[in-house]
Length: 407
Image (cartoon, rainbow, N blue to C red; front, side, top):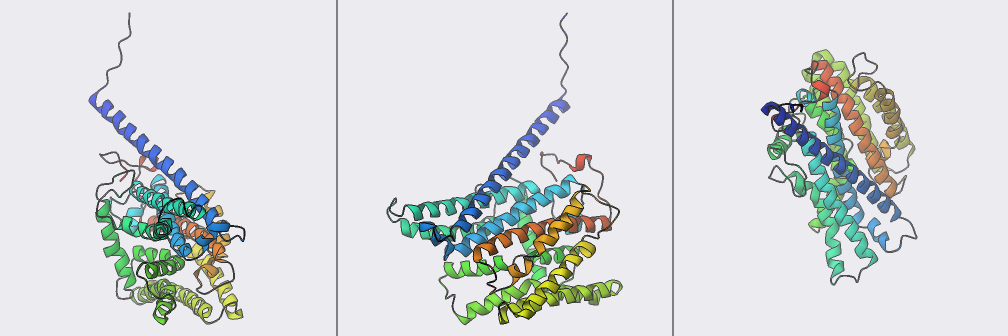
């Protein structure tokens, strides 16, 4: 007698289709992450190699195109790491939406998808630029076309971030509401940050300002990039002064936020005053870097600021040691150790006009600082989420909406 096959209900069939969609999304995200990381490492190695005296034709990369590619790669890396951190928060049931007031449309799929699109465009421009350097006569008019490639790479992250549709060019996934979420992020979060201390201080706004404190070199490269795009004089006094303003801006914003918080919150006034003092040290570090290179006061300020920042990261921002944790136990000591090591190059990276190390080492320090900042972000938001209340229980740390995406 033949066995009767099990009956499949409509709900079971719907669940199978749903899980197939989830597996497809996870496969695409995993494939994209691995490919993007490989392309990024290859590009960084090629940029470092361009500084070698035996680099030959590709030594042109370390000239005027270098800041453009560096800004494009670091901006794309920020997007990739942001998506990875959002995934880590979701996987470990960290209530990041409540802490950061994020829209449900801000998902790690949308962030990673946009980051992949940026990397593909930037890497394609970079490799094609290098190939045309090695074979300048391979294509008629190659020189003129070649010199536009760094500009395209530089503009790619800005254009994709401002894309009016939910799916950016080259993105592998579509997330409904993603375009609106990006506009809200710029208008409701980044905008109020830049007008501190006239805007109310919230955790989300201080979090964004802290992240900006790791990006002064990206701001400097962006300034150079726009000067190249609009054919401005990079030797003019105006250009130099704007560069100094951008070097100070993130730390002045955080200083203003700390002073405003000290004025508004009497219960935590002492803590906020200490925080204001910490950012005053960083402002003094930038000012001394502008005044004199390799000076004894600069080294003293760099050492003092680095130690203060490390202590604040671990004990104040992360709240360590603490009893309640969301991430695996091994992550916390490794985060503390890596934060200390990666902090050692922070002062050089944020200081303008410093020539303690070569420019290709600055690129490596920039990559290290971006990794450190997003590791810091993972634990900073986790600590804040635990303070404001435990996240609702979610099976395996993930929750799916009706269309198969994570909410």
